[in-house]
Length: 101
Image (cartoon, rainbow, N blue to C red):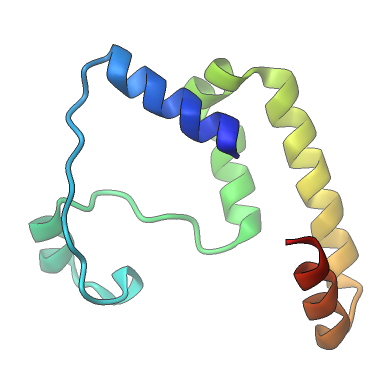
């Protein structure tokens, strides 16, 4: 994940993209379309890990920046983690996550 952030930031600098900053004083998930437009929000983050992994798999530019092998391995590890966590009770899942992250 850190490699992706660094690669994307570096690419943004190379492409001379503007960095826009703004305060969002409420939960972005509950913003209406007008509020999103005012804040310059065009895309929302994926709602869950499965959607995030699909977005990563579909992101050809980021895959090129960090390397196909890194992306494929990362997705495999995270999908295995999802399978493992889905087989646990909520309390077990909470403890497992807290111990690792």
